[in-house]
Amino acid sequence: MRGLRRTLDGGRPDGGSGHRFALSLIDSLANAEETVVSAVAWALDGIPLIGGSAGDDLAFRSTVLIHEGQVCREAAVILLVETDFPIRIFKSDNFEPTNRKFVVTAAREDERRVTELNAEPAAREYAMAVGLDPENLSTMSFAAYPLAVKIGGEYYCRSISRVEPDGSMTFFCAIGEGVVLTLAQPRDIVEATRAELESLDASLGGLDLVIGFDCVFRRLDAESRQVRHRIADLYRRYGVVGFETYGEQYRSMHLNQTFTGIAIGRAETPESRGAKIAT
View (cartoon, rainbow, N blue to C red):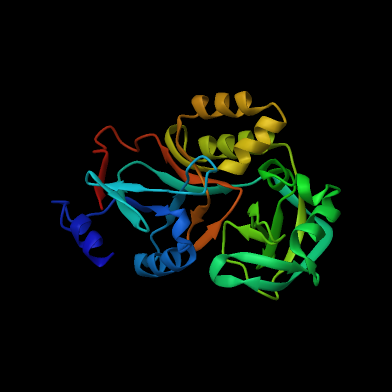
């Protein structure tokens, strides 16, 4: 990180600096997002970090990154960007907590796998809470009935990726014994997304570009509610580019079932020079 920062510091003849942010692209199947994001955010020393975990269309077999023409696995790519355009990082979700709670009473933390919730088999306890047969749980179920953890007064989603043959559940994020999970219910995904983009547009005086990282479960939820085309219309209207993820990074946190990104506003002056990137 220090080397990347020196690269940017040495690239401006006027000695000044523009607006900086970092992008993280991480192999999700390495199960290392929390470790990587925590270390990178610390080294950035206040430069905001945003990013996403690579997926493979819900196959959960092989995710890859490409860096300088090379295919990389179990890796992360960090980009440090400086621009003269105004920027704002953001995080948006469309769920709210219910009163139903679960305590993780048994887990294999190195595998991100929960074997028991409330001292009962994990998949069975979750299925009972959402009114489904454990045999019928699917990615659509997990998208419609997310679990969340409360940190610092705010709820953050902890998405289930799949049910294992033994009835345990594997998550997209770190999970451990003693964690209290709250069953969440969805809000209107279209209106939540519209409100976030409208707010960014207003605060930046117009949007030039939005680099977004959108959880794949948000897409599944939008498809099940037959509103995916409306989300796509919003992304086109506000210039959103990016990809669907198996997890999102926001500052020093690894999140699930969110839409995160960096919004880039219009040039502050006619002489604005654009952006510089170090990787």
